[in-house]
Length: 106
Picture (cartoon, rainbow, N blue to C red):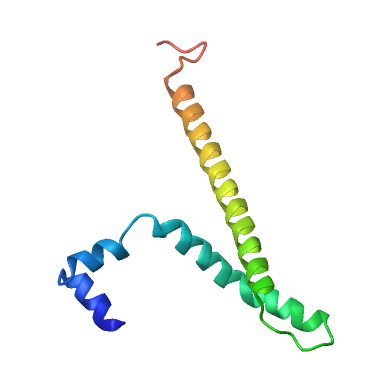
């Protein structure tokens, strides 16, 4: 694995680097990372709420990916809302700066 990373990083394997750098991998990698962040919480919940042996199944993985997808949507929506509020605030600050104030000699 280290050799592949080193070879792609130094330009020794342009075909492999092109495949691994393909933009289509980005949504899959983001979803997988979110599932990775969520999986320990799901496993702990399942372990502490059941009195039976907990097995890792396809259903567990599906649950992790579903929760990961939803948490990514929530985080993205909050970030977009915050960015919009910041842009609106900057717009009004600029508008107020350039608007003549009544009673001042302009």
